Image 1 (spheres, rainbow, N blue to C red):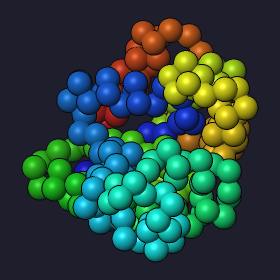
Image 2: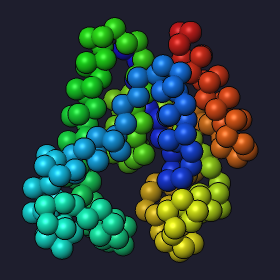
Image 3: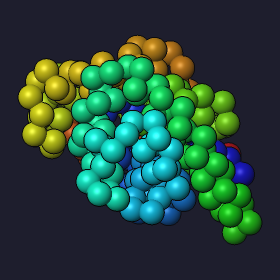
Length: 197
């Protein structure tokens, strides 16, 4: 079993690469999807989140994701507390899905993890891929996609590890400075190389 860790800053194009490789047959294990399941109604993480942050981030039994996001992106200590709760649960789920893929005879899995380096999950992968977009492009995408203003977008971007640091840690960098087709062609070349070895 080979584990590829795929990461990228917010609005970098990582999810586009992940979805494309999934369509090409890659077994994608998506940390964000696991996180959403853990925090959905009845999710395993909700009691711990409620204990840590209180009822103000809930609408009844349902997590108010916007309220939680506003809190953790404006308060580094709150963000750290949330990460300390969520990351072990997410990792356990990812490892279980990887184990099941191994049993199915899958040779390579793609771990899609926005905070791959921040969490240390990269130490459990065989190689790491970074999708890198210029900051101005990230800001434009966040404003268009999520209705943020430029300041809110910049706050989200700056809450993550700097791109230069991620570049230094990554084994391969997929530059997303052109068209989507160019990005996907770069991803295809990396995927084909990976599956030849």
